[in-house]
Image 1 (cartoon, one colour):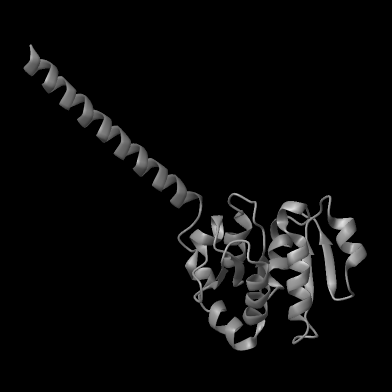
Image 2 (cartoon, one colour; image 1 turned 60 degrees about the vertical axis):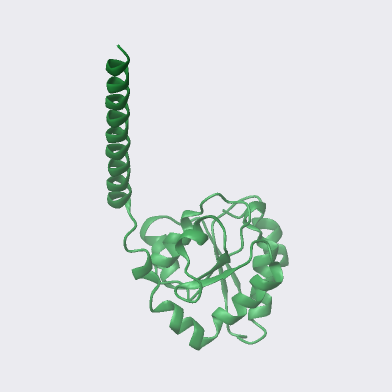
Length: 182
């Protein structure tokens, strides 16, 4: 989604800094939204607007990339972080929300302090360097291989069983107290 909550001016600033050393780099923007027209008006020829994509087509777009820049400071989770990692893309993001949970700094991406735009730009440039990119890419997909609906449901069921067991223990303890008081 191309919208203000994505912090797109920082994305563009990061990409322009990155192209200072990687002049052949391209920025691939997937999605539509209220900010798309403004972005297209400011874009350079090395920015590609792919529009909305789904399913295998979206997966192919992820597969065509080398790095995922995620500068949002307002999203509560951002599933796209896990999708990028699962697609083999190192992620540059703030140490916040989904990225704080999924991105291990220097392992499968780079974290920067929340809302530090200058640090984000520097991290994007650093991550785009061939040696850093190769290092980070080695671990991306494996770092999120434990995620998925099956795992999420299993964890939910486990938590529910734990809550039920605690409730039963609590009820037994109250029953003993009640019988001791009579």
